[in-house]
Length: 347
Image (tube, rainbow, N blue to C red; front, side):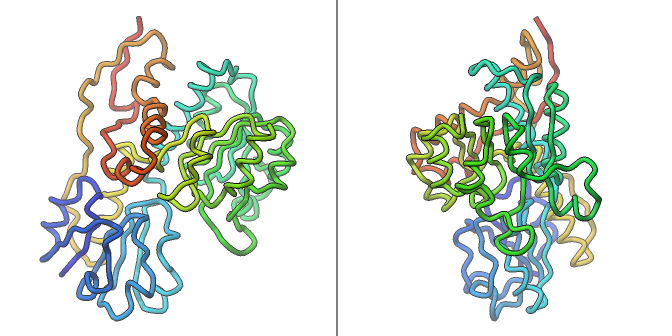
């Protein structure tokens, strides 16, 4: 069996080489029809477009993406071609919640926000949005949830329409998949009409997909004050992002909100589990992230400790100073552990 694996997927090399007869590692952007033609399986990330142009004429029968999102996989073509696929739902939900929590704590520390007096709107309440909502409530925030597919399936209780979030929320955070067409379309969910409907000049956070937010409308909203701040981790046209917007946002990072080592390990494990399930192979491997250099965290408060563990300004400064290194910053992302890896001691 031959498998082509994205070379930036962490913690996978030992396990996959023990499972397959032949393994080729390649950069996500370097997957070509010639490379995959005689492969039985692909293990990819978002930078590999798994469509007819790549797959036609190959013997690929299975694709695993070590990511929550799967809009880089042409699922319609795969179904027609008999190619099975899997993603890694929820793998980095806690990592994204860590990113949003740190951003909120920075807003409290640097901008003087009283989080306990604020209302957060969570748009998209799947694996990630659910953890973000729970985290915000633990900080004392009021949370409104918007998720039309879930509301249709489960009923109105616990959900609010988007226009209500636009009227009532001080901060809006987006955690939807990218859906380009249909009843639950999220492509350019945030556009000029939506921004003009905002009543409280909120802060906008986007860690979902760049195309959920219209870049021009976002820039206009920041310029005219309809939005007070923006925290952006995902961008239209990545890695060729809007440099003007990058300099305008409070925090701008290179699509790394879900890049904790814990989240990466989860994604790799789920991809391998799906691969083994498809090919009826034993799941005899352990995928664990490295220990942090220092497990003991000394701080005055929990908030200070959490910002010592992860401060998004570090990633934001790196991108703002060298936006041309967007892909390198993602590919060579340093070790970042979640709070469960640490022991806290307070002064």
